[in-house]
Image 1 (cartoon, rainbow, N blue to C red):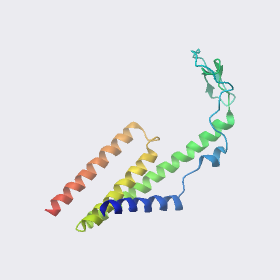
Image 2: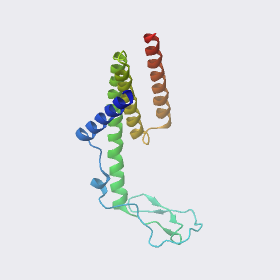
Image 3: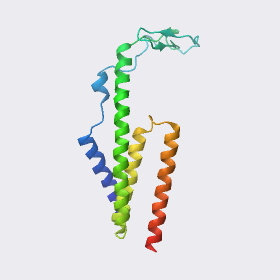
Image 4: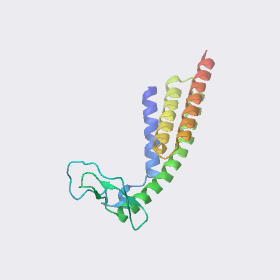
Length: 170
């Protein structure tokens, strides 16, 4: 029962967030634009490590699968991808904050209802899954120090809560 409650709690949180705060869609920013494909594909070869400056100030390297020709300066792809990445980063940070708050509430509520073991454990499990989901969504944008700190704080809090509840139960 506890596992079922944990999974259902997470599904409610996940679908609620997607309903009221949907994630940005790549196609809304780039449409059909995808990673540029080389003009011709051949066997990879060793190319010089020089770069060409594009009109937008970015640089492109040589393509080892295309006779060491420079990759194309594709301003539209670069621009739309940067716009999407920027919006996705803000969304992921906000999602992390939302799931952090919801996860903490579920952990506290589960701890308060721990006398009903399946309900309490299920709610706490749903809170932990929510915390993992929010952290995972923001993980690519967070720095190594932030990742380490959030991981160690989460581990200490969950161990501390488990210790407290086990001591309280005895």
